[in-house]
Length: 159
Image (cartoon, rainbow, N blue to C red; front, side, top):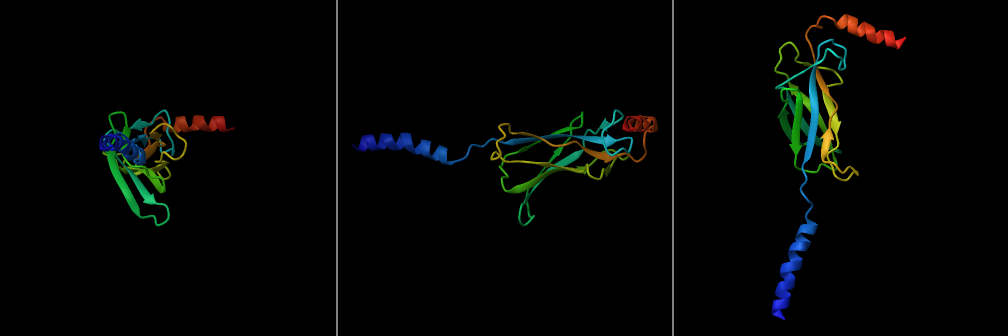
């Protein structure tokens, strides 16, 4: 009888423990950082992407707005970043945000393009653990040549 109990305990107990503990599936927050070379406020064909830019993901408590999580990352040679987040942030508000640009000529964050909301929970029906943040950008100190013509061409389509 003791052997049966011991065998049952060895088989059932690990199954109960693993079922009670949620699986650890990290989230991958991905996005792109650009330089708005035409001062347009959005990406254009003249936009360049910034390698070595610092980006971070921050999560705040929904009610108190206290910072509960922060992790920083760096863009690769194409301006893309990937930040791995291990925890589920079900009741928190999370944003990817610009920290700094290595380019002196493009280091001022673009208003409205300096952060992107990301949902970091598995309790929303999404199967994938990859979360894509909207592109974020810095403004160039001076518009590059050819921007006037480019922006004028956008106005032609407006009429």
